[in-house]
Image 1 (spheres, rainbow, N blue to C red):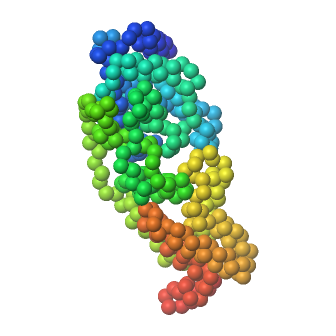
Image 2: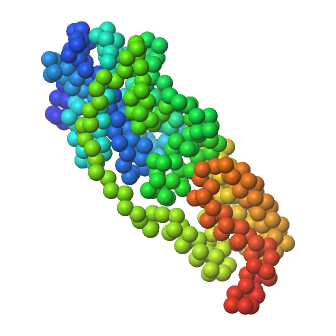
Image 3: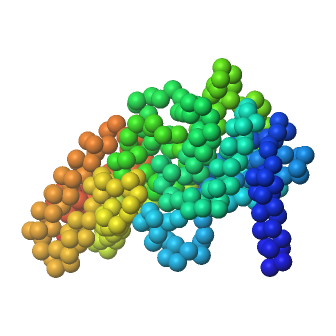
Length: 378
C-alpha cells in the first residue's frame, strides 16, 4: 500500500513538474514499439510514448493500452466491444523490465520536435490522464494503443505528418494481419474465422505497432526526417521451431479421423461442433459492437443449420436429412466461390473438404459410405 501511495505521489510530482516548467532541448520525446509474443493479446506488439528529461530526473512512459481484468463482466464487455481501456503514466524502468521479462523486443524512435511542440504534447498527455479522455472504448482496428499515440502526436505537429505510406488498394486488413500468426496455426485459424467482412476492406488505417515503426522510418517533417534517432533497447531472441501440434497437419490428422472412422457418433460430433461455432458467430454478430466480427461469411462453413440437420437426424427423418444436407452443401459451395480470392482459403480448406465428404455421405450413403468393399448401413 505504501509503495502504491509513493508511486502515485511520484507520478503526480512528475506531471506537476512538467506542467509548471517549460521543457527544453534536453527533453526527449520518443515512440516505443514493443515486439510480438506468443500470447493472443501480444501477437501484434505494442506502442507507447516516452518522455525523458535527465535534467529533471524524469523518465515516464505514457501507455494507452491499459485495461482492468477486474472489470465486472470483463469478457462480455470485451466481446461486445464496449470495454474501456485507459491511459496511464509510470516509470520507464518498469515498462522496460516488464517486456524484457516477457522476452519482447523494445525499439525507440526519438522524434525531432521543437520545444513548443514538446510542451504542447506533454500538456495534452497530462490532460488525457486527468480528464474523461483517460478512458476510451477499444476498437481492434480503429482505436487502440497505436492509433491513440498517432492521434495525440499528430495533434501537435503541423500538417499531421504521421500517415500510412504506400497504400496498396489490393492489400486488406486481413492481409496485413496474416503474417503475424505465421507460426501459430490455431490462433491464425481462430482469428480468420471469427473476423468477418470488415477485415477484407482496403487497409488504409495504420493500427499495428510494427506498421507504425516502419512508417516512421520514412516520415518527413519540415523537410527532414521526423525520427532523428532509432535505438534498439532490447532485441529478443525468439526461436520459431516447427511444431506438428501447432500446424495445419495436426488439423488434417484430426479431420481424417472423422472421415476414416465412418460412424454416426463421429459425424454427429463433427456437425455439432461446426454448428455450435456458427451459432456463436451469429450471436456475436448480433451482440457485438466490434465492426470486425459483423457480417461474418464464415458462418457458411460453420453453418448453424447443422444443428437443425442434427435434429432431423436424431428423429430419423431421412427425407429432411437429405434436403438439409443439400442446402448446407449449397451454402458450402457459395462459401468456396466467395473465398477464392481470400488469403485464408488454404487454412480452412481441410474443413471444407471434410464437411463436403460428410454431407455427401448423408445425402447418398450407398455411394459415399463404402467400407471394406461393402455398403455401410445408413
